[in-house]
Amino acid sequence: MSEFHRTDYYSSAGDTLKAYVNKVMLRMGIGLAITGLVAFALFMSLVNGGFFYSILSAAYMPVVLVCSIAQLVLCIVLSSRLTSMSTSACTAIFYGYAALTGVTFSVLPLVFDFGTIFQAFLFAAVMFFSCAVIGHTTDVDLTRFSGLIFGALIALVIASLLSLFIPVLRDSLLISYLGIGVFLVLTAYDMQKIRSFYYSSGAYGEMRENLAVYGAFELYLDFINLFLYVLRILGSRNRRN
Image (cartoon, rainbow, N blue to C red; front, side):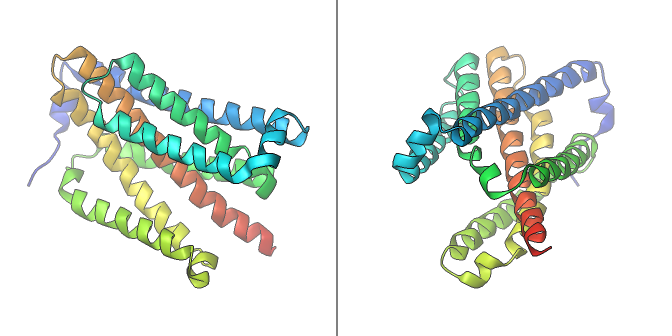
């Protein structure tokens, strides 16, 4: 049975690995901060009838479509050119993605009140960091379950697409609970991958840094999806009360 041994983790390279993980988490935190700041700034412009309000009033769907396509393109570029780009370029793509997410998140306070959004953020943060700690410290090699994990992710994507056309799925919170479960497991899995990134990159400094950016990007996506699923559940419950 393949395992990760703590004797390896707490060896002489342990302190360096700890610094590497801290760097990944810092970059992820900066990404979340960018998303929050952009979302808040654009929301204020929206409610005050500013420039962003005029744009959304004239072309809401085109703005959403452009942001979605741009995010997909950035994700593909970051994944496919990770080994050939500089670390600064990888970082710029990640933070650009985070800023675009802030654009789409700027309308969330129009659907959910700030109290619900704050609660969803706290719940998501607690669950995320709990699973991150598990993934960071466990001896079990989670890559053994990669097939099951990504199978569940594909099933979640298919169910989400079907919910656009099937009212029963769209009105049910089952997909949200499934999504939380999938991304909690993915958080632990991606956190463990960061350790693999560190050891597999060896002495390749820039490649190791690029993998740190990519690891931060994956954790960022895990947190954002957790937050959205929790927000949907809490928002639905608040509307029923």
